[in-house]
Amino acid sequence: MKTTFTARHFEASADLQQHCIDSVEKLEQFYDRIVMCDIVLQPTPSDENPHQAELIIKVPRKVITVKEPGKSYEQAVHNAVDTASRQLKKYKDKMHANQ
Image (cartoon, rainbow, N blue to C red):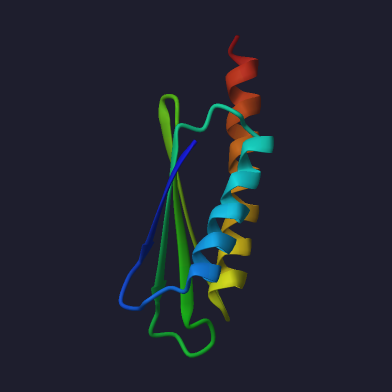
């Protein structure tokens, strides 16, 4: 899986980048045919959840997009990975049911 990382409107630390990439790589245990994953972190105007993580996951014949807010970027990424893992499981079950 090819992974790209983008931080919009702020400078991301190397630790934050590595944390995000490590978290996203865990998605391969749910579906091993992921072609590419884009990670986009950006601040939001919300006071309650000022950070947002977006995952754009490309799999054969589909693109799965997940946007999740959080109190920190790490929490937002964790929430997005949880949501994406559920969507990938659902997609995988659907693909196996059609075969």
